[in-house]
Length: 283
Ligand SMILES: C[S@@+](CC[C@H](N)C(=O)[O-])C[C@H]1O[C@@H](n2cnc3c(N)ncnc32)[C@H](O)[C@@H]1O
Image (cartoon, rainbow, N blue to C red; front, side, top):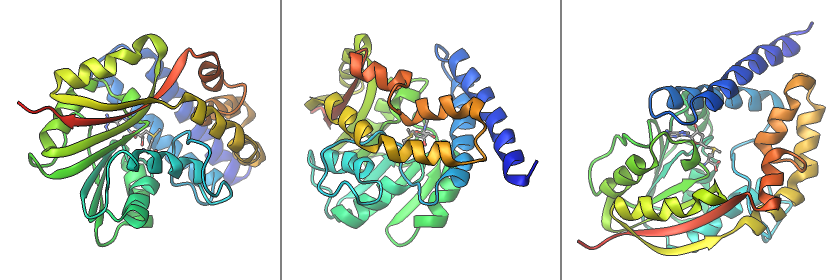
């Protein structure tokens, strides 16, 4: 057995354990659920180094986009969609759940944000974001969504992309988002939910002191992106000898490949993908 296969097997065992823990702790609050998600995203980050040379985004993306052949075009397109809800130029932006840093770097580079801070629970993802992107106006910090290590009123815009479904306490995150945002700021959030839980987010936001000023269902755009990106993802997953066949199904599910339970949930309407602009409510 060569070194790559051994690493693949070791990471697969970690992924399987983390996936089991995520299922087991789904109904729990911290700390069990947070630990399970951290383990999953640490292992995914390591795995992605084996699989993909240039993998900086971890969302399902939206279509259409101007240039579908550009690198991570659909995934960055989701950031562009949110940036259409609120100008980012010259603003101080925090991304909570910044993953591998591709989106945070994009909003600095392509939308002219003055300073961008990316925060994530996964130390491994933050290490990679720092190595690849950190520089003037762009910083990365390890932290949890419901305990933000920032002062009150310190950001103009808070971005949250496909991350809130992982949180043990979404309302605690929204209260923290409200605290660190300036009164004239905005929270831009995109994520999926089971259809029967979709209305909860609006109620949670209102209880945390936000007013929802824009809500858009983007499930169709997400399915179109999954369709358009399917062949590329399959090629990467299936061609990598370090991915044992037993874990390919899990990785295809995580990547939203056609036929995976995640993809079928979007197609059947069991899960919906939503995008919001929320503003601090005036007292
Ligand atoms: C699907 S990825 C999305 C990453 C990035 N927003 C993107 O679109 O590329 C979800 C991210 O949320 C992070 N996350 C999960 N639970 C978290 C928590 N409680 N606090 C902060 N980040 C969290 C994960 O580590 C992961 O990097």
